[in-house]
Image (tube, rainbow, N blue to C red; front, side, top):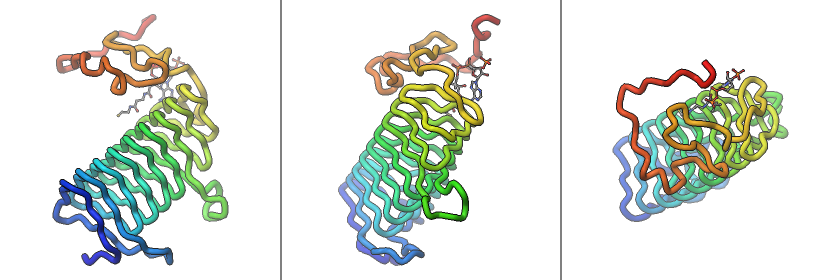
Length: 231
Ligand SMILES: CC(C)(COP(=O)(O)OP(=O)(O)OC[C@H]1O[C@@H](n2cnc3c(N)ncnc32)[C@H](O)[C@@H]1OP(=O)(O)O)[C@@H](O)C(=O)NCCC(=O)NCCS
């Protein structure tokens, strides 16, 4: 398909056959070039609309949709069948897993992780749209599998939202929240590895962002989870 705007690609990019760059927005908005930095790996089925700006090191899975007006930082990965709706801002090193929906006007800061099936909402009373705005997810926050974050909510720095939670209020920095509606159950630094391999979080930072990541050996398969403490 013919792009409706110029495409500005950086160096060493791999764009699979079946990728569409510069897709025309259905809305009447200004159309500016698609800019993608160096080393992008864009897999088949990905559609990137006009007026999108992306830094270096982008990696997409298959069937990813990135709508118009998005600004995405460096070294971000966005996996299969995820949609980033229009006019969002994503920082650097953001990792978004499969089947995630990022609603319009969402702000995601650096080092955020969204697990598979996370849903970010933006209109409190659909279809009003007058105050439509997605959540703000502060740097280093992790959102568990299948969680739903309601409009305007602020997810605090280095916090952790438990799997399947529905978050309807702001989450403090470093808090662990679970349930529907989500409630604080701990500070992330209090969490323990059931296998006693490594402390999952230190000063809110997950092991992957700490130097010891390189020295932690994976468990042999199959992994057998030990009985919970106190059982
Ligand atoms: C929130 C979480 C970190 C807590 O893990 P944990 O430290 O092992 O805590 P526990 O399993 O001991 O649970 C503590 C309490 O919270 C409850 N709880 C834990 N996770 C919950 C969840 N997702 N929803 C509702 N309640 C939950 C437990 O039932 C338990 O309650 P109790 O004290 O009344 O028995 C974990 O359950 C979780 O959701 N992790 C995210 C997994 C994920 O999405 N990974 C993404 C990669 S695919």
